Length: 263
Image (cartoon, rainbow, N blue to C red; front, side, top):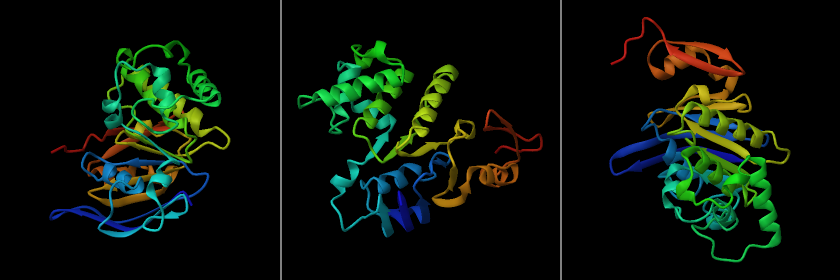
């Protein structure tokens, strides 16, 4: 089992952020986690990655029951790409060195990389079409290029679970589609990591994502196979307004229904 959380509740002060979450991610599955701002997505990710302890419930990731294992060791098998990480990296570092730092999950490169590490980093640059970025400073990269470098960095350690936390935020249409194509390539790799892709944009849910969880106000609203979750009826219930959907290229695109009232 990749992820197994049971009855997870997390409270901060007097506010309940997550309320009775049950979620299982099995081998061979790729999931999208969808929720509006403030729905609890990031809080759930922090619990899964062992950075936040739930108020109540049980967490097991990669068959490691939290509370019985060294979480520092578990995290070595989890890659997490987020805008928060982007802000921590040194802008003068080259894209190549940032990718290499993913081997030890450090901010900066503090040990001499092995020849195997160098080869892996070069292969990742080639895989994602980023060879031309190799020696460019991170601060000189576009938003889309930075995201590609961060994902390559996360793959350096060959994680079993890769969490992509709203990676398309701030990207223009072309950059978004290029990044999504890269993510689909990762999903199709034999022996690649299980993916958890976090977004609040339904159209970003690629055909490779087998399952989708809709999180609303700290609770699971819907969870299951993507084709069953992404229907007009279920999405209308989730968003609280009437929506229309159409399918194109294996993806779902939504628009508000004419009778929808947005408050």
